[in-house]
Image (cartoon, rainbow, N blue to C red; front, side):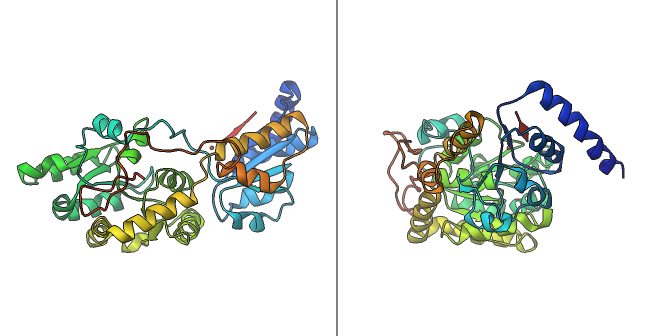
Length: 341
């Protein structure tokens, strides 16, 4: 109940801090906590670049987008939803994947080179749905592939018990782990198929590795992830399962994609076509233009830059990585934000 009062009190605080710091530019990913900063920035004539990663922007982003000098988005439809004049399609900035080696990633994770690997992670919210599905499907999954499963801290004991219930010769095929922080890049490089939520970073990182993705959108937060998933699936790189329909049988059905070489390779190619490997460079170009008070590049130039067509080398597998092969043989060889001054 006190949040509106706190938000109002934040405006003079933001005004004082910005007047004292005098930043050359402000970059924000929106949210209600950014409102006082952006209002203060407008009063002090400090340029702002706003990035929005969802197809459907939140209410606070829609309310403050007009205060930004430039808006960067992950999906083209977002520009129309925001109704701003200077809007750029950059994609989602992600960690650099260019130096990631698939074989080294598998060795780091203790996964043999040949088997197909299913990566399952539900993000930080509502992982129980994923854990329940994996527990019910585990015996069938390990007959088909290896499974790397991000369980969350509270779900780990239950999933370790599920692993211990497997036949001894199959237990190594299932790897439950509470979190993947620095090792997330390695997990994506090692995987052949991902089952996960539909946050913009998940979609962008799967695309960077050319990974087919089965999206189970988080059903809350105004349904933002559902719109993300549908937009991404329209490229051919993903399939969508409603959260309410995601159970053990649905997970096993999703894993059958590993046994369909033609569909797997088509989705992998679509993922590579959807990637924006230089999204971070494109957003940085906008921030530098704002900070130096120079003309913003035309939208077409930013789109080319984000796609890696303007002198930026897109992420690639190392020379020693195996070429893509059909999942039915030795496994698919193609692995596929806050406010700051």
